[in-house]
Structure formats: structure tokens, C-alpha cells
Image (cartoon, rainbow, N blue to C red; front, side, top):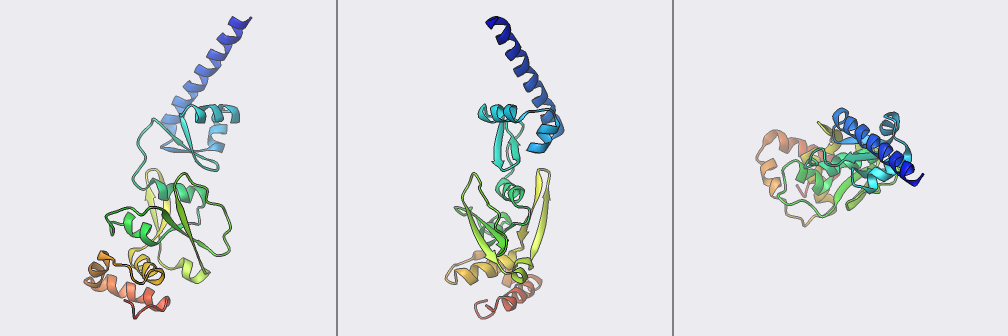
Length: 200
């Protein structure tokens, strides 16, 4: 009886891994819990696959399919926006992911509206910034990637935010923007909105 029971468990386990192979073929990198359930996985099977390292839980309701491919360079941006689609990458993180800083900040800076109280429990350090509705919407850009999309403030807005909250900071990218008339004008408009034109 024990032998038969063990044999059934092996068959069930092999069937689970076979279904996982199908998931790898149909999904690129990230998969939602509801998609896994729709493919016939039970919550228990999802838990076992996570424990065994076949799935990595990145936030509530979302998993990374490990072993399929390497995570993209901007995976933190994608994952935080999977957790909260209204979040926007901001400050030094926005500058870094747009090529304006050589070194990645210690934490991912994320902007949300003041009224947004959703949790951001991630597998990496996150620093949250709350903005009023008008200031929050200015300068948002959407980035679409093969693994998912996310929102990020444009470079000029991000520079102004850095100068607002850390006036003494030295930003090498600032000189490049000043030497580009179109980008400089855009930065000045943000500076006027945030009342920091003198600092620019």
C-alpha cells in the first residue's frame, strides 16, 4: 500500500512539472496566481513549486518563472508596478534607469498619490514618496518591455524632484540637460510648477 501511495505521489508530481513546462512556453517571465489556477494548478501546488524554487513570489498575486531566463535589468521597476500599477518610479531611481546615473541607488524610489495607501511589500528595499494629485501626474511616462510595463517620471521631472528634496546634491546629468535647449525648457517648466526655478 505504501509503495502504491508513493507511486501515485510521483505520478502527480511529474504531472505538475509537465504542466509547469507548458507554463514556461506560454508565459514570458511573470505569471499571475489566477493564470496558474486557470492552468490547473492548485494553491498547494503553487506553494510547493515556490518552496522548490520553480516559482519566485515577487508580490501578492504575481510570480517569476525561475529557470526560464534571467530577470531584466529593470525588473524592480516592473515588479513594483505589478504590486501597484499606479506607482511611478521617481527620484534617483528614475534618473538611473534612464541612464543619467552610473550607480544604482540603494533602494528603489517610488511615487504614489497621497491618498494611495496600498502596501508595497517587495523583495528589495523601496522608499516611497507621496505627492499631491497635481504634482503626481506631471511627467509620467510609460515604458513597455517584453516582460511587462511600468510608469516612470521623465529625466527633467526627476532632476527637479532631486533638487527639491536634496538641494545640495550634485547631478552630472544636470549639465547635459542645461546644454540641450528643448530639455532645459522642459525642466524649467517643472521647476516653475514646483517653485524651485532659482535652484535650476
